[in-house]
Image 1 (cartoon, rainbow, N blue to C red):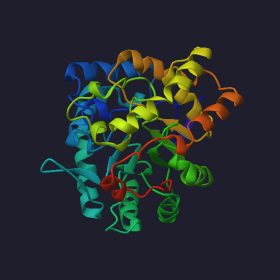
Image 2 (image 1 turned 90 degrees about the horizontal axis):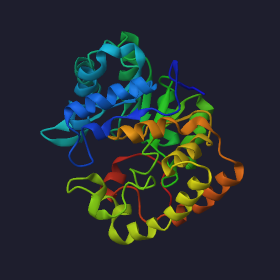
Image 3 (image 1 turned 45 degrees about the horizontal axis):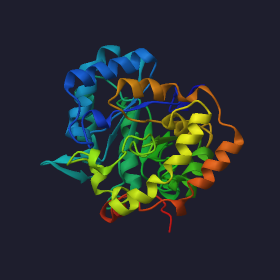
Image 4 (image 1 turned 180 degrees about the horizontal axis):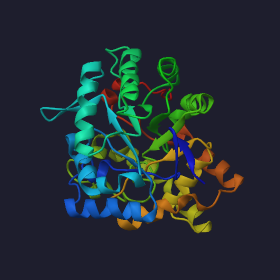
Length: 328
């Protein structure tokens, strides 16, 4: 069942740790987050994903303090190139910045190596070759074991791969966001890289976690995303009936159905849903146990075609910062 990631193999479902410190309103209490991380390892999770940006370092610190004593039990992925400066998010891919970020990350995570280190965003003012070249030097120094990219196009992936083998690309991928099918899904397969899908249940939307906009906290990042604006949100809710009904017929939850659909896209695809709920933690981990019938995959493909989705996945300013292929 395991899938290759870098020099290791991991369970198809990893844990995205961002929500424990960042982005979706008030994060859980520290003791609850520590409990959840340990519960994940107890369940068998073996792939944890964090970043310097999340909580402006707090997420890496949390992981280091909570489970560094269990370091041999998990594949650790983190990210550089997008951090917090004076409380603001900054994209900076200069080699000197990346050098500083890795050393800070190793200290916070209480480890001597990171298994997979992503360039969180390509800083378009710095040639991708320079940023990846610096990551390659980190590999030589033993600080990281493999290199990844996040939110990039197939063209940029090929440029980076010419400098140093790229082990993984982490892009948003779900029934709701299928941009990777424009190039990166095939490019990663061809290069022998993993495709790591973040937000595989559409930031909770496809799992039924956002029944109305009223449940979103004031500072929740979803409030600023086009798909969660009132008119688009109402249209997108119409997609959920088919998803719920299909999941029920298969004795799955909607989240499990979304994850199983992802795993039909290729043996190189892994997912990193995030959660603060112990119940959802177990639910997600159980998702790969069965394979979807072909007719179900076809039905979902058609129902969630891009022209059925209302709104872009990011605001215009954020779209300008990333390098992914986008639907017209």
